[in-house]
Picture (cartoon, rainbow, N blue to C red):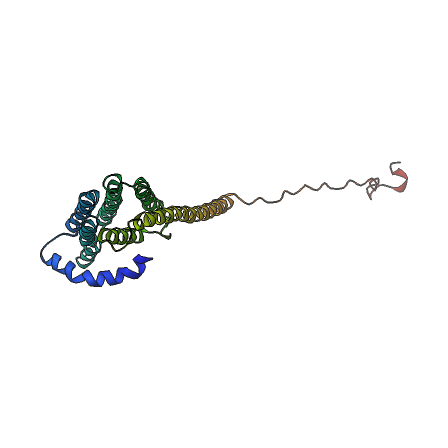
Length: 251
């Protein structure tokens, strides 16, 4: 949902930055790579040490590269399957780093086994959410449904982590948000599975009907067989030839 409402605004805000980077001769792929490295560094360097607010600020500074590189590709007419593949793959890496950093925080200085387990659940379920869509699209179907897509998950966890780090909310706020995200991610996985199942069953039914129609068209029409009719045999004696006298008829 956040993708639909915020994409246009973010695109407009970062259009000047994208245009400036293109004027400098920077490739969209470079922006994608640098942005992912920045997100991973902010999550895996600052979070495990307990610097939640600083880590969140570093991640936020780099996470918008996902929108900038897309703008750059469109402005330069360099959109390609390779760019989409690279962007999606590195997005998964950045997401794993964010939740992995929180796992390390709770397993270390955070000293909260429940928080570590919830962050790990979010990491695993988030990967399944992304995979379920990618696999469906690889099979020619759609799976862009669910209550917890990538943007929603990322915004929620970064807000909670930053507010906890600066002390604006209690520390238990982050585990609560992680629990809600884990549940929402599980629901999203189920939603996508059911959505793809309906498409697959509909496609199978259509293929079955097409196959039956093709078989019917290939089968030649059968003509009804006719039973030969026999000429009835008369039981009456044949009349004598007309040229014989009456007295000489066969008796």
